[in-house]
Image (cartoon, rainbow, N blue to C red; front, side, top):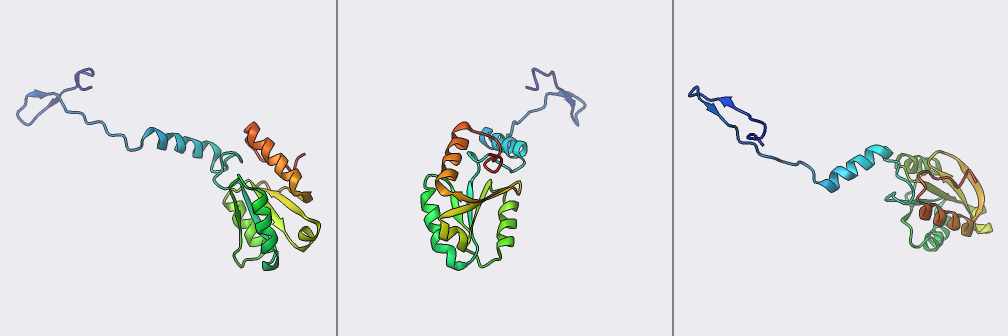
Length: 154
C-alpha cells in the first residue's frame, strides 16, 4: 500500500524512507454488519429479528400458571415470562425500554376468558384477543418480514 500511494518520510538520517503499513480491522464483517443493523433500527428490531419477540406480563403471581401455558402455545417464538415481583406498570415500562415488539398482559379476566391483552412497543393496546388470532398474526408478520409490529392497527 505505501508503494502504491508513493508514501515517503524523512528519517533521522535525513534520508527518504518508505513507511511500513500494518492493516488492522478492529471488527470483522459480521460485527460491522450487526452494528449497522442496530444503528439502522435504533435497537427496535422487527419482530422476526428481535432477540425477544414477545414478553408475557402476568398481573399477579396467581396468573403465572396461565402465563406459562400461553408461553407453551407460542412455541417456536422467542418468548419470556416476566415473573419478577413488580407492578404491572413497571413490567410494561421495562418491556418498553427493552424494545420488545409485543407484550401480553394477563390478568384474572384474561385467564377466565382464555384471552390475552396485546400491547406493542408503540404503546398501542388491544384487549380480549383470542390467543389463536394473535398467533396467526405473529406467523404472518414474521413470514412477511414486516418491519413494525402492526397487530393493534388491524
